[in-house]
Length: 218
Length: 369
Image 1 (tube, rainbow over the protein chains, first blue to last red):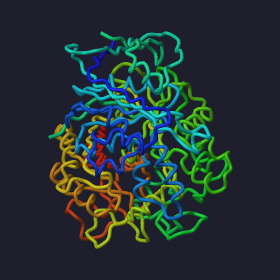
Image 2: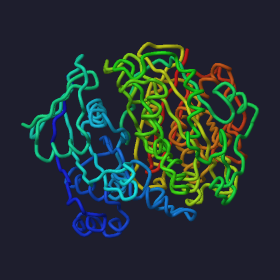
Image 3: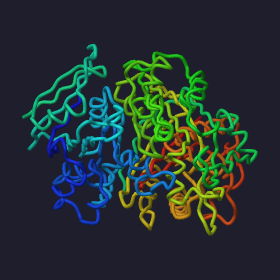
Image 4: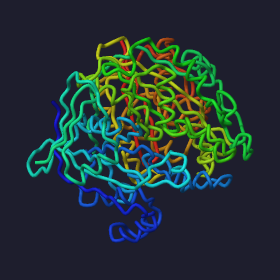
């Protein structure tokens, strides 16, 4: 069995109709003004979720997002034929979390950006559990799309979460485990439902990825 | 200061690639002959625009069955048959573009059929059905170091006993989306790239590329012995001026070489600042090691470049001669830059590096008998 303990935990679940402009007002005190202007909705939510956590240059970050920088992608596409350099660089996965870490000037050893869908949560968890770094940030989120949402290619709501995982149970609020086994896989929580479970400190368990996943609260 | 490299050696059972110059063996032969696959091409395809250097497997305008699918079908015929996508034989797909060209096409012709393969999850789902992979398919996307992440994660899965074999599959095809983006950054311009050359203006090329590798815990004649990663988080498109990020990644891998006599395949896109910082860091960390790079011919195959260039390195080692820096010119940033091919016989290892937006650095150690 592989286990890690949950320390820092913050979940951003803004109002369903919040857009980037609203988040800039709501979260203005958390970011330098110069950075705030350029940050995307997802970047703002990820930054707010990571606030209060500390990462060092030997630490690692696992990032999960199915749709990633949806609005920058939409806006970049509409900027053609005069393509926008800022929107191009912002639209590239994992721009959401890079905005935050570049704003903090926070180097890290390893960044693992996942971009799957059906079993994204357990894949990101497995990456986090296999990380040898003493501190691993597990971060995820989405932002609400506009025309891509109408096409079923974007999230219907914005959210973000950030946890710090370590091997130490001291002071931990929760525990994540993976027990290898031969159980048939069942549905893996969606990224959004995983964020809801974190916010509600709700325990989860499911079989998948050749083992059983458990998230419990201490 | 740098985090230690992962030293989880794995055997390379199979590895090949597809570039505009052919498979790995054909691409290696063409590089040895100093062939340049880059051609000056309108940056937005049929929508026109400035001429920029692109190495393409076909016209880059998106088609309704995605233009990359026939090439990936061809590449997939070379993957050894296995229960890919099962729990014991998972697949890791790595790309920075996936099918994003379909999104650009949709915004032009509004045909929603493009959207069925435009997002990462949709394009990977298409591949999963095409190739009969099971549900154990993981997806990484970290710009131009993505393939390194897939290979490094595969080694961790194997050493944790969570897989018996891992297929890492990578593809990136140029579209107006990505060509227009790099053109807007002014590094994709009308000039052919000259990696590691001291000159007035830097330039990159972009290229289509796809590759795969099958990894196992058992040692074979070729092994990926170590991986190092580092993320500067200094600037989206720039590096720390003194090259600390390049040094951190190279130093971590240097410590893992165990006295091996190595050559280095660098990232070498053709940009000036990054090229200089990279060449200087490699010269410091691997003194005496020749530095070569192949993006002056193939262009930058983006998230796939790490795996495409690994396949070419293996073909070069099998042939006994390593291609030099195609497109490079003298003077170079350091004396270590190899403009011509060199024999592999005196080396027992190779360092393969890639870099990406955000100051991301990746390097791996390839060893062989």
